[in-house]
Length: 498
Image 1 (cartoon, rainbow, N blue to C red):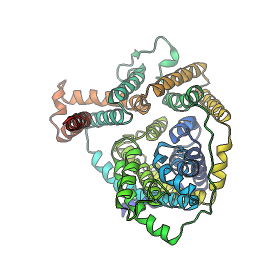
Image 2: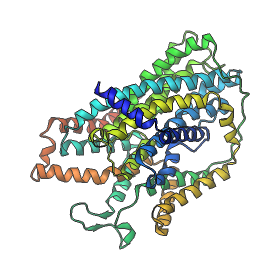
Image 3: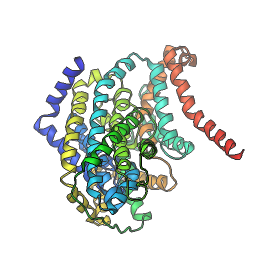
């Protein structure tokens, strides 16, 4: 009952005119971002992070959450009509959705994607409402050794799972950890790695790093390496589903939600795995799978879209309760919280209760807004694709530059921004994941502080990490994340040779 009362208070906060406006703008902007190929929610949120200097915390977090979910809805539109996924999460939708569009069923594909996203998003939001406080209550009992192990788990999972290579992921993580050390030491007050530059004494701004790595690097990479792609559009039929489409879609929505929600709760690296799993499940369970890969099967759109949105919404549980981001966008949302001096984790539900429950309530409101925006306005979103790419990327660079300069009016910040942008281009070119850099920067100083506290408790002995059951359990999970995938790879290679 206590959860229900807190949720009602959250609705009272989220339903104020100003917060509703921020939610609507976030959802609309997110949908537009999802429609435009190459500009994902991570780029959009990173580019808009400087607004945290001026906008109140609850409003800006509702706004960023709207962008995050809106991009997932919008990505399906271009996947279906143009075979151009706006997000990696929409790649699977393109496989069957575009086939449906080519056989004159674009309207049904768009409808099942939008309604499936709404159903999955709503169910996953209920799960966040019910389980996030329980996880937080459990985690609040942890001490410094457990906190350090929890952060070690975050480092390991984000660096080992996000990206194609664990070595590249760990390299990116160490770049972030090194950047997090710049500035004044938390305990001794000594300057560290500042190079005699006064602007470095306060450390490197997380906003600056996020904008440089995601927004600036994205624009520069597109200009340098991506060729011009001519999009061909399928004819848009009326956005509605027949009774048969409904009968085939609703079980796929529920199965997709059941597959996607657990993947959001664990640091398993984005939405690609659950969407592919959902697609494989639907193909296996279909009574007549001759439509798959030929005319396009509606289950192949409904299931993956539901899995995608369930994963994205459930990702709020580890972010809010443990401070562990499970995707690029949640890593940047972690940075947005930190800008307000708020640290997501077990204490968040007690220290910033009003903000958390307003954010959870806004997920319910945002899901309804996105359904209303996506079904009638499909034609409008598709017209966004007519914006020439050069104007689009020039706009991103201008917005990023003005936003970062407006924070401290420092020319040094601009040099640093474009230096980090160049680093981001190099990382993308050689397939290094960028999220571990942001996670390393944010959680590095916190992990250092918890490690020092734990060592004080153990009177200088590292055995303190092996003397507490929860700490040992987390350590075993960390080792398993690093070792098990390699063991499985070796075993599968040996079986293949035999």
